[in-house]
Image 1 (cartoon, rainbow, N blue to C red):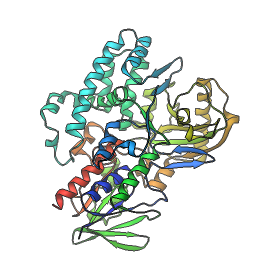
Image 2: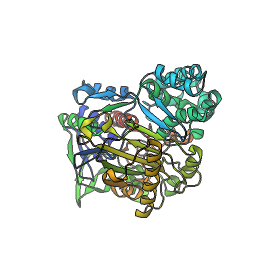
Image 3: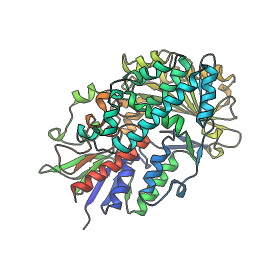
Image 4: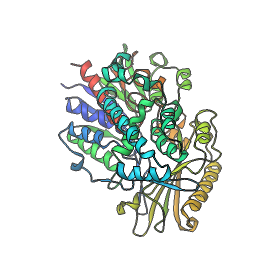
Length: 486
């Protein structure tokens, strides 16, 4: 009889783990507290408008392709994928930078801003491409059990890049502040400041400029639907509206869960829910990490998000838009160094209906606005309204259009919602940052060292935050379980 696995949560890492474990012959059931599958990658559909209320950037298409290839499938078996051109636009106070869909276009734009910079850019991206190859082939596929996993001929040759920072590497070659911001932006997906992120992570710049920005028609939730469809064909069972209240342990072994006041037995438990929350489901003697441990860690930002339906098509925007028309470094300090509501925040605006007509009614625009903020901040309706007015005024000024009277509806999501809906530690949005001291084997472990047959996956463990790393995390934990049970 096949061993029974219960997976807590249904985000990308859980879905990945469920597919790999089911393929290996395990009897897999997924328990999700909310009414839809997908974890943070959920969808809001209202009045004909469709919003991805979680991840909205499709980077590293090779990782998605590899996931489906593991099951003799392709992404095109499930959804249509389009490369965006331009990939995104960056708004500054006195100019805009448009990032095209290939290096030639991007180099032309860099030359416009800083003559001679294209030569440096091509060299920088070439190095970033090599880092990407090493990261994907040699680093991120390791389960984080030992520091020796990082010791390969390739990583030894790159060891200096683990002790330099992205910021120092970028600023050594580029002098224009706009170009510096454009090159430091991608590592924000890793959840830390550029001056606290190892230079090796320049592979994110290759993911950006080299591999490009893509869009699955219908939105990011199409990936969730594809993975659920695949999982069901493999025999995975899904239970929504079923919050797990306890992980049951007997004689040092995980033996099941309690959900909806019912004890459910299994042989193996995997939690893809927030790692900190997952350990609160255990009796204290079985927890690996103390509250002091978590409080000392550098967490990725939380977010204030607005989902807005506009009754007209908007001007001077692209699918993805970054508003860097204020002080990048000041905002970063107010997230990481002295956590507070930002004085004058950068923000991101996503309009998927610019390239995908299915995301909004005819003649209308779907708008998703995100303000990065420190986790754990006070979250009130008054604060949300204050920042809504602030970013709307900046959006109006930078794009040169009236929008206040064209808003059909708006909904917001912030720290309190991250905590209530995802049990997120301090309401963080992206997990634990990938700083030098929080990389690979230094992150919380995939396998519990105190409870046999208890495992973890997701953005607080290896490899780290982001959708592609979540897919990898699910595969890593499934491999560990396979090894444990072979």
